[in-house]
Image (cartoon, rainbow, N blue to C red):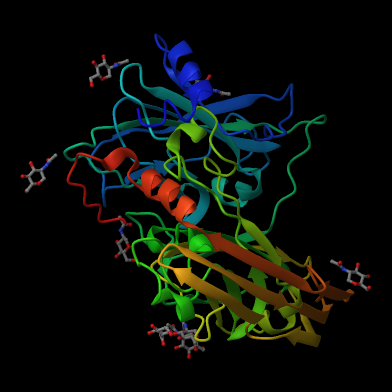
Length: 441
Ligand SMILES: *[C@@H]1O[C@H](CO)[C@@H](O)[C@H](O)[C@H]1NC(C)=O
Ligand SMILES: *[C@@H]1O[C@H](CO)[C@@H](O)[C@H](O)[C@H]1NC(C)=O
Ligand SMILES: *[C@@H]1O[C@H](CO)[C@@H](O)[C@H](O)[C@H]1NC(C)=O
Ligand SMILES: *[C@@H]1O[C@H](CO)[C@@H](O)[C@H](O)[C@H]1NC(C)=O
Ligand SMILES: *[C@@H]1O[C@H](CO)[C@@H](O)[C@H](O)[C@H]1NC(C)=O
Ligand SMILES: *[C@@H]1O[C@H](CO)[C@@H](O)[C@H](O)[C@H]1NC(C)=O
Ligand SMILES: *[C@@H]1O[C@H](CO)[C@@H](O)[C@H](O)[C@H]1NC(C)=O
Ligand SMILES: *[C@@H]1O[C@H](CO)[C@@H](O)[C@H](O)[C@H]1NC(C)=O
């Protein structure tokens, strides 16, 4: 109610929707699927997530047999449809199949009365190698029911497989997908960092290309990481306002201790962020399908194809002198692997490696009072990796991974008493009048 005077237009919208469920949505491109293909739709799971903390939905998913040979499909989509009625926080949802995270979502905060409904259709065509085999499908949606929080998320998930034909060709796909995963079989397969997350991976000897997809989202003290204050100023301001460790974050993928690629994360604002009515009914970009990040690690193939295990590490660093961050980020990923037609081992060598372990950063600013300060953090990054990759069938490929030439981020942070007031009021969102303690925060 506190937002009615602030957002008359939005509250009018809510009034108009009275008498019918509010339909929430995220603006997104619809998946590109063939129009006239035969479709096989199967129900993957149906579950009411009430008090579900630590109790994921775990089901078996088998490929359909009447839309062509498993794996020959032109596309696959998932339809996640959810209703909720009551009061609840936005929650993270982690979809894991074959121990590989395939989709990270979050839940719109519901309203009481008619409640809300949303549908999101997610393109999972790139994961066809996983869907071609029977396996364990897990939806982790840790929800809490307690005084003041009674919203249950009632979910239903369908998968639609589109048969290929002469007009709808089979989707291009990797030969193999290897997870960057915790391999848990009863919950989502993402890891919490810090500290860093690592696992050993052994590749087929005839690997010729490897693409990494990285999932990463800030949570708890890192949800609004871009509002965090550099440690050199943090002791001079009230810790109630924000957190330390500064506003810059870089997600690093390391192979055997060497940086193979970096990600500058997109700031997704969940539906409880700042001013919840702003995200109703349209969520912010990425709230229902969190962005993921692709890194071409093909230049490492001459090393990866040696038949030995290699150490893949994901961490998240700041611009602080010791690179520390708060708790926490959830990270995972997968490696899309292309193998050669010949079983003979791939050879070659890395010919150029120009990557510093950490970006070059500077921090400057001043604190004038408890709620009045400003500072600027800059981070500069260069990354260039090249290799000659020689396939078993004799093809020599010079590969270059240089996603940017030199990138500089400048984060300017102005904090005044006026800003402090608006932020303090937004933090009281949903929880005024209840004794809230949330183990996920
Ligand atoms: C998604 O699933 C819901 C519930 O099963 C259904 O009502 C809706 O029509 C589906 N939407 C699409 C685009 O398939
Ligand atoms: C939503 O829950 C309230 C009780 O909190 C109930 O009165 C109302 O009928 C419910 N709405 C729907 C659409 O079921
Ligand atoms: C889960 O994984 C553990 C360890 O990898 C294994 O011992 C257990 O049998 C698995 N459980 C199921 C249900 O697959
Ligand atoms: C990978 O390397 C890091 C840093 O040396 C180490 O801490 C970690 O234990 C290694 N991971 C595995 C799976 O061996
Ligand atoms: C990872 O592989 C390295 C190199 O073979 C080995 O020394 C290390 O023990 C492995 N770590 C784990 C956790 O298996
Ligand atoms: C990093 O630096 C901050 C502030 O200077 C300090 O509080 C923290 O303990 C340090 N962390 C580590 C792991 O050294
Ligand atoms: C980087 O610079 C080189 C040489 O100037 C240019 O060819 C290349 O397209 C640039 N790459 C990017 C990602 O900007
Ligand atoms: C909060 O907790 C206190 C002490 O346990 C209790 O007296 C009070 O009634 C609670 N308030 C609410 C809204 O539950």
